[in-house]
Image (cartoon, helix red, strand yellow):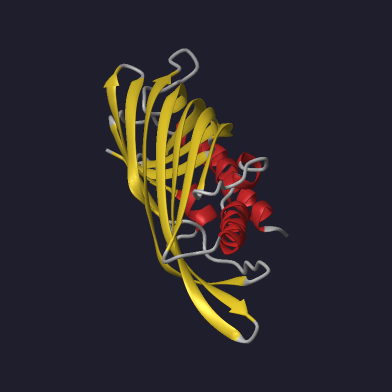
Length: 253
C-alpha cells in the first residue's frame, strides 16, 4: 500500500463512521445550538507528519447560517530524503520552520440543513498563506576531498479559492469538519541562497538538488513546478490552479 493510499483511507474512514453515528444520534434527540468551534487540522498532520504540522482554528457564527473561521499554526517542510547530484549529496537539516494562516467565510445552506450553523453543508471563499524556511547542509565531493556548503531557502504560497464542505456535530460537542471540494488559485514563490562563494557549475547542481527536495517531498509541488526551473538568482515563481481538501476535528461550545 502506498503512502498516498494510506492517507486517503485515513481521511475517508472518519466520513463513513460519522454518517452512521450522526444518523443514530439525530434520531434520539435534537442538538443544542452552539456558536463556536475550536479545531485541529488533522489532515495536514497526517500528510506532513504529526511533529511538522500543528495548526489550530476557531470558527464563530456571526449571522444566521454564516460563520467566519481563522486558522493559524506552525508548519515545516517534509523530512529529508536522499538527494544526490554529480558532486553534492544532501546531509541534514540545520533548521526548518514555517507557519500557516488561513481565513474562510462560510454560508451554511439553510434549505439543505436540518440544523443551524455551524452544523451541516456549507459553501464559501477562503484564503490561505503558507511560509516555509529551511537551512540544509550539502557535502561537496571532489576527488578524495570533501567540503560542506549550506543553503537557505524560503518558500511562500498564497492561495485564494472557493470551497464546499460539511461539518458534523456528534455527541453534543465533537465537531468533524470536512472541506471536500476546494478549487483555488495559488501564487508560489521559492528563493534559495548559499553560504560563501559558489561557482556557477556548483550552483546549478545545488539548485537542481533543491528542486528535487521540494518537488519529491512536498505534496503536489511536482505538478506545480513541473515546467519551471530555479533561475541563476535562486528564484522560482509560478501561478497554478490548486485544490483544497481538509479534515478538522474540534470542540463546539
